[in-house]
Length: 583
Image (cartoon, rainbow, N blue to C red):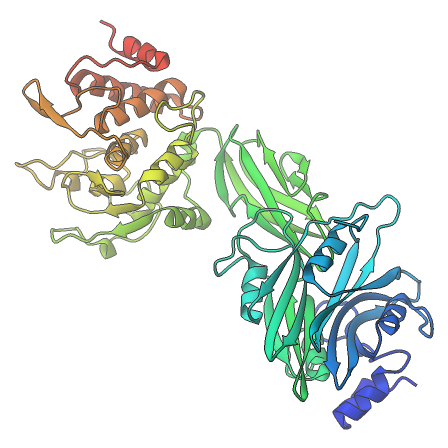
């Protein structure tokens, strides 16, 4: 007879739970449905053999209907097994079923069975695993479904031994020293010689950044686990997804409930409200997590402006139209969206405020130190962090905007000094720290650091400080206008050169100091000249005004900053030299 769950809670827990859960139907789901999503709740059932578990899952033997979902834990208690089956709804329409079970004694055997390796002919479609330590050996009970005709199982299972539940959680989320999160996991625990062992059988179908998907809770009774899963009693809302590991510790049970956010699409790229230039390659990448094995292969990507873009967990959009897009990833019964902005060129890109996520990315790439000085107007707290290109005040936002321009700067021909990296990645390779000052002293670089004056953090152009006027850069020119970004960026790259191997440094010649001996293999001036030459000739997204400014800068450097007439063994470099220095 099915006994209402409300009666059980008013009686002695252990006796009445056995009376209920060894019966034909197990503990029924809660009624009414708890707060949260409108889905059936979870019940639980106690079984003493794996065959009884299999019959219950399939709705065979004494059971009328298969279950739609299940999580299974097992303990070794007083010389017998107890299987705790937490399940969601029995399916009167007969859907579900097809479950079988296998016993393994080593995690490698479990791994091979899940993947169809070794003597196993094909991977499983789905599986739930329970494990225990029995005397002197492990026992892994694998309850599995085989794929039917036309189905392609995901496979790609791995396994890991975690030291404790927090280590397991870090591994699942790709945090705390682990490189990237899992998409699906089955977690078991066993008490081996008074030492807990947590085995994680997992899938990592795509490379992804860390997520906050998994948490864990220790319950010491089935009722507490039941209430936590369903959001009953002291728990405010049900979990969306979970896996469960059970242990018997001396004289009491432990249920480790690893809760997650269910089937969810985690957009990894592009960044929210990120900016791009028309024609720039935009990587669309998502991680799908679920209780069932998934690989993201059926995700559909679309734009509200351009329609369907493509399918898969990672694709590239090559030519998004100019405008504000909403990018949608849809599949597996759910969807996720993020806004992005696409501009006609880097000039209009530079005039749009960087997104919060873009700023955060720069802060991950570099250590930015905002250095206060002792002179007038040299304290950063005096200037709000605003995006106002009409203002002549310094702002941290200016520096972020310039650095993000460099990140999106591309060329139709490879730069002659970056080993085919982007110019931004090249800078990151050798520079890790940027010191942003508000004085007018010289820019400097070396040992992985660049120190930049006030001019890098204002929108308009400024004079450099001199002996006669050391604060010259604090005073805007009459009728200040937005200065082309190429000017501060070439100075940034000049100083970055001083942290690279093989930098020859500056020298004195022709009666002048601060010179480079030559263009090829030269120092900071050589780097600045090559960069501006490439912006002028091969900049993919730079507007004409910026290209003309780059041409003028390159001509000035080639004419004045080298001890001998500049030449280069790279034919493309030499062609630009010949063009810019022609009589």
